Length: 483
Ligand SMILES: [Zn+2]
Image (cartoon, rainbow, N blue to C red):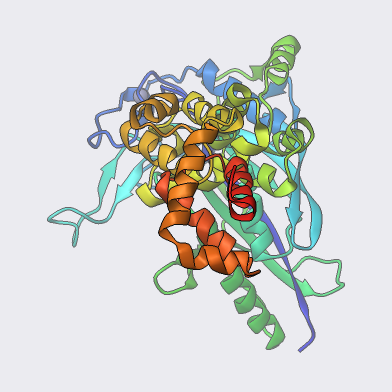
């Protein structure tokens, strides 16, 4: 069989982080009792009129800037007509031939090198309600409808078919999520459906220009599902085309339990939706200064932040990548570095002991009981030489458990490093008295017993002896018999 190349484009539905819906004042809160956040507008009752939520437009423009798109001064809402039980007014208000923004790019690091993924368009639309097929006594015979989600503001982000593998598609989706969360446009919660992905997948003989017939896989709500569904679909299509058949132009669903895609329906052609401009909303006209002000106020994007961490803090690429994978972790690191004055130590503690604790307890960085100033306090004590060696981990453990500051714990538990020469000499002398065998061996030329004796003195001082001073004094007492 000759080899085939997958061609993949994504359409991502992203819920905008507004308090109220896109065309009415109903709450967007997730998890409210069914049909409690509804009104005549979002139920689509006759005569109800939509009023556009300005905050939704602002967030959509912000996302468009972050994806390097051109924001159009004028865009037009359109009715997308179709019948579905969770869409009682018989049409969805979306944007069609005049979307909010066009022509962006996202840079992606993949295993095969850097890749540019072009963004075709970003348009605004309302979400539909939700059909509940399970969870009720009569679910065997009836479908229930919850309209709380109806009218929640979305943007749809459409890419060009620039992706060439399932892994790259999953990586792109992850990158997009990181961007949308960093700019506070989306909460990133894929389990609650605030970010959903449809994948357009086709295959063609390697080297061919023309695109194959594409299949749309709907509603992929995790990076893993994106990757697995596309992997399956690519193999399926290669099997069809390689066997001399043709791929049907259709919509398919990902059956996660079965690990396969299933045919859902033949693909409606675009003209079937009978789009026309929404008569109840005027064209959306944005003032150029307002568009520019939103761009100017854009926070730093994850990639730029990673590069800055390498330059500003002299961190290894690896550290910068781990720390900027989540905005909260990056914020925590920067606050710690600023308060401690030691970026590399801050990075080591955040990626090491702190992340280990977060994993162990299954908590996010926002829930960690040690604030950045607290961790910085520990780092300052270490840098000042107040504590050292294994004691530092003990102090961190106690900080995490009690929420107390490092200095308090060191003071209370007497953990400060022992720099007093006479105290260390006394400890060394008692160890030498207690271990005449190793002492004699050392003096007879068996240097390896030195490490054992150091360990004994550390044990006697509960790990608090100044290590350099201890080494020095032990050597002198062993070799000359006096300090
Ligand atoms: Zn409403």
